[in-house]
Image (cartoon, rainbow over all chains, first blue to last red; front, side):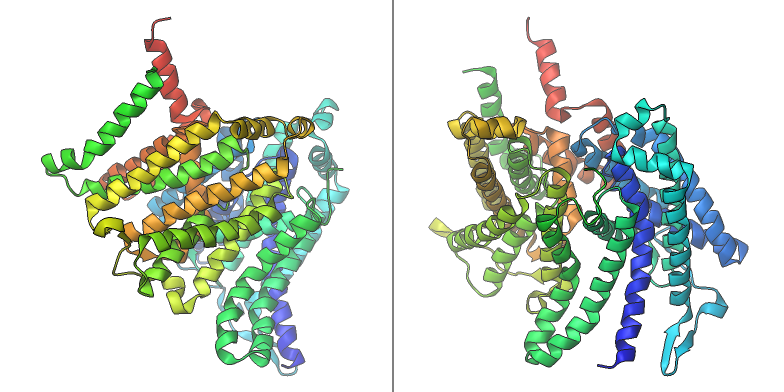
Length: 305
Length: 315
């Protein structure tokens, strides 16, 4: 096992981690500020990817496609928040689970009605091939773009949440909603904005990942659960927790799938390694979350004390 | 006999007469649908025990359904056909899994309990995906069915229906007895206020663990029945959307009500059956119905039925 191989896998882990961060950032704010379980967050990711694929085909430009997707998905998210989700804040978690599960069913079929079961979307021509980043290490250009965008968005989001006035309000809302609104903050309007921001981040992740995965109905369901794993590990409501959790999950998942398998192949007889490897690899992040929840249920960066 | 008992007796009679009525109407095909409803009613009722009476919101209950289904399918594919042995295997396997998962998960509360049950179910989902010897992600088809005592074969559609119905009736009867038992009252007390129950001397952790394991095993039995009904198991049975569907059935029917699981399972599966014959996009419409239930019927369909009955009854 060479150092280059480990480096390549670590980059893959970072790439997955940053995409998970984009999804988890919105989810953790929604969860933290409004104490709302939103299972339909993955549907916004799917909608973002579909709109990006549609607009890219229409305009011929990936950049226009992604910009349009971000805008439209944010708009749709705010509309959804103001119409259907807002009455649910006062309800218990159970009602929220049922309502947002219903939204998954509705949005999956609605997307199927409008766009069909899947749409093609490939990365811009110039960024499709691999490029050399170190002597002897070729790495797909598109994955580098994803990492770069992830870093930029993470920094912007950090500045927005930690340094801006709106960010201070959001953090105040996450740590104590009643006190925050008693201080005269219009938590309702603030939250519509936060929800729109979360939806926009979903669209960014959806359109960036689309060339690697596939734009298809139901694509949100699996990644949604990973995003929940991220925020459970990081601490509900914490952006910093979402970032650390996302990178942790991305790297553990990727290394589990590659390095762990290789180690098992070297350590165990082949029939054992081929049976245990894939199972352990996919289970590793969930194992991480279970251990985390038992030892430190409030997550790495607890918001509420 | 009170009105509740009369309703229960009438429902049981109707369910017993159903195969005969379907045959008379020349609609034998729907016996399969009825059997599916019974199987999912058993599963949803077990989740209702956990959720509505124990107050534990689990987003991983499908794990036990899947474990029961896989235990049965693996035994069948290895040539073990005795239904009693299948039942024993389910109790042992699912019971052990629920004991471990419950003992760990119950150290957490609220949202974290939802998350950790989800985590365990996902682990088992991926375990199912990687069991190459038993179909891996493609699932496992079984050609034979469980044999019951007295030479009954679950392949026979009406035998299956009556066997499943008997189990459902037994489950509902036990749940009814449980609700009014000392233990049932203790469990409801801890659901409403754990600290108070603890102060009153209720062994909270032990009570919750017992409920968790019993609910898991009951759901596993439903899974074993499902293997016999479908002749097929796949890791999708353990996917989190399956756990979500079971939750939907319970909330749709009525959380914490004896009949909630049965009514919710029947309503959801009948909606699927009727709407999918009309449109490809049936889940779109089911979604709107569920949203309407959340917004306007806080106690589910059972709540609606009860308020209708209350309006009709003389004051």
